[in-house]
Length: 424
Ligand code: AMP
Ligand code: GLY
Image (cartoon, rainbow, N blue to C red):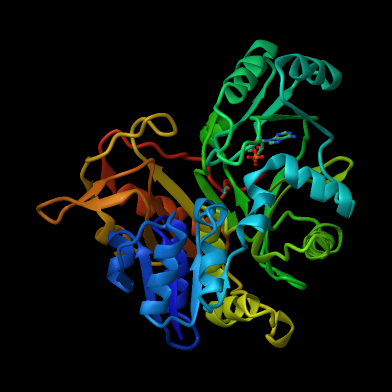
């Protein structure tokens, strides 16, 4: 197959890597890609937010499948345009991507489909926010309704900080569609978080291996929320039957509800869960693979990713065997630039990637990277690299990932030292 991957992060590097090491061989293009994807696939320039440009590229290169990585192109209608051009696309139409693009919409779908989630109020004024905060009490959970790259959520004991975040969200301009800015105030969910990616074909769904993401910047879950600072899979502590419960109580009902509404969901339904003392609750949906969880989930995939995604994109999931997994663990540690998640600094030299990749069980996926005029690798974004370690068990995978990190130098860089620490 000829496959076009849209995006330029470590997730897209991981997808391209899985496609190029697939059980059968494929030609892989990445648009626009990064210096890392250029080493394993062909990078083609495109504005990923321009639906017509992406569709034209897919037609021009006569690809058999387009896989859209990030959420912004999906919300912008890239999948609609690609499908309209007659090319199978793995990723939801804009109408279905609203499951991620609007938290209020996701809550509405979950209510219709009777999916367990946090109780919530959608507020458009500060007075409503104050009432909702007091109804739930501390800790307060305040979410920007729209896309915020994982940074729109504030969880705090401090009522003033909660109000400040709500004020900032509500003071944004109305969206081009005319929607008023809104915030979602939720009850606080305790318990560990799990990410389960459900591959959907519009009517059917199949789950990939669960992973856990570390969203806060600092060790011990201190500091601000980020896009994700590390991840591991599998989860040796996860309750038995977790994935089947997610399929039964979340994925299948949501896929049915989306089809019933006339906006069938094709792509990854990313189910972010809290395993609370009262049972599982959905924290969030995303409409795409998670980053950095994809880096560890795909590192363990033993069956064909291309076959799975193509079957989903063409509504034929039932025709392919369920995914198979290697009996190994994978851990990824994200190396972020100085200033992330605020204003990241660009242009710092990134050294040691090749040395890291010489270590056993280590590979390095690139994200916010560029090559300078001398051809040297430099930082060009917040999350710069995802260093992945694969090993016989979680401890070995973790040791390998951190051995990889040790090889890399980037001035002012930040990473967590407690990713996938085995629980006592
Ligand atoms: P979201 O963007 O909705 O995934 O939220 C980002 C992070 O905020 C989650 O991964 C959680 O760690 C935290 N969070 C979101 N909602 C809640 C909640 N209702 N209770 C506790 N923590 C939450
Ligand atoms: N790792 C969280 C996300 O992809 O949204």
